[in-house]
Length: 225
Image (cartoon, rainbow, N blue to C red; front, side):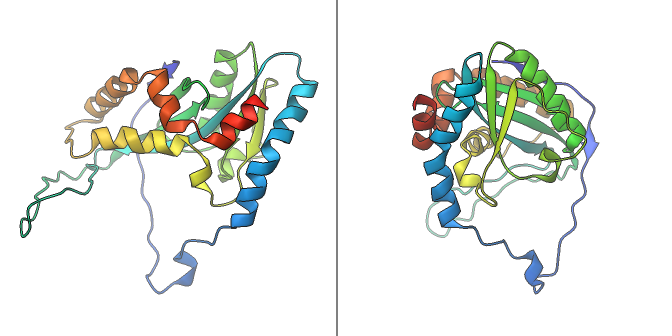
């Protein structure tokens, strides 16, 4: 499992809209687009295979932020008992760029200080090199930096974009969620300590465990079509 963890720290600042601003409401997703995407994916993969001169592999790609602000989760307590969580605000963070092969659980992860097109280009180049013997399909969302004009897509990588606002179709989201569940409630004094903890947990995953999290049936069917 290729795992590249390095890079300087970064600080991310996000703005928040007014509650009454309708533009801040989550956009509506199209169920019909999601159904059509899943139904048409096997044919799209088959078309790629027909032109490929090497084995075709399917990966799902996404990024996730990790920072010193503690991750919290719900807790079950006795009736009338309010759980207490120690907080230590921290604003340094880093990002993991990742790709998971749902049929095998194999994965490629790259740490970067920022979430941008330069980081995605670095990810593509290293991913391409790590899987140089295959033609690699990356299924990913419509993030602007995923479609930046300055990107150079490696010759052994093909991008297939998910329907808008469809994270539930991307199984690597479950991998991020599981990873963060294991990091929940932990307090880290420094970003390097957090990076060490994340790396430690990432190395503990087996391919079988990741496949059980990410092996969505529609992707397995497309891979085996």
